Length: 236
Image: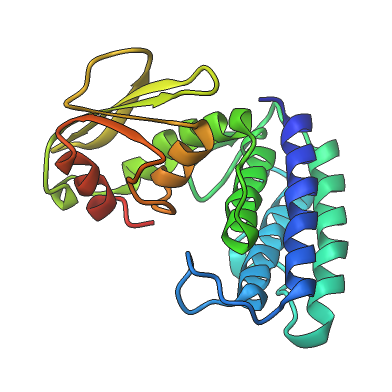
């Protein structure tokens, strides 16, 4: 997925999240225990501000989260968030995506930034109001999760070793995920795993982020206890 498409998703999901906050700022967010929509919007605003600060600063050095402008509390939050999204979109639209940039995930191509912001915003829009995530964005999100986030789970946190085959049923997308002493790795393609999890790309993406349980939205074939191992180890 190209950066322009990521930015389009960021704008759409960012607007839906803001609308949800304005409709019911104190509505609880079930997928983020202890948070209401105000806390959720404040969190996303902080992420947007951090990435905007990095992109506006350039690739010469890494900008720390504490160096970015903090989102305000109270009545100023909504307008600040909206202004910051506009600034973030402008920065992402004009940045050099061909250069290598420093990030919390190590050196990455510039395209890391619009992708991360689109996916961050999509997941938290889902937290606020639910609804399917665009299937092509979800496939991209599974790739990002398996390549960037899942490997952060320490190998000794994996209670089971084995392979999980993820298979999207609505768009092209298949992954073989390996859980083992070295942590979590993956490869694309159709392959037999110890367990197969089949569902829409949106549901698979949300499952990767431990947002939805393995229920009747999925088909499961094989050793389902490996899916429990994922939930235990990938606690993010």
